[in-house]
Length: 238
Image (cartoon, rainbow, N blue to C red):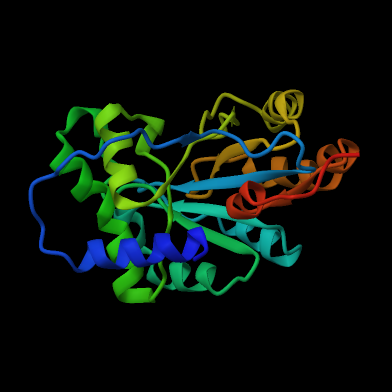
């Protein structure tokens, strides 16, 4: 049976199970920071964290991605989803987008025990399953923070633990689009996973993505992919 089918079955069973104390399992889940270095693609990923001010949704960025059908992966927090139901539904309807989860309330996971971490991680997975009939298999920890218990919980839940090898820095209001682009372009290589934000915190993100998609990636012989496409990539760079 294919791995992605097994993941979905396991998650469905866990969501239906009665909550109980966390029981560790043997082995260590792989923390994925990039795809195959032979693959002629990169994953453009966007965190959708809750925000205190603003709409929490970067409409110009989304409009650009959709208009040009640029594959992308979005990591949604439960708190963000609760305030953006139409947007969640819209993004799930795009066949070139992929959705993962980003914790329920965007908690600092290492500050919590294993049972609390499981609750934080499963929250948005359950929302997507119950309200949108979507089984999310990708997880990214809030703030990129984790400890050994986080890795064990993610493994037990059957999720793929997705980090990144390039941090764009796009939420930093002191960085210009040119600075962010230069930073990303210098580090981008086959198989890279790049983290941006789509919650309006990145004021330069839309401009940076346009330059990446139209200039930087083509010049490097690379193309955007979803995370799953990247991890399953069988192609090789020339």
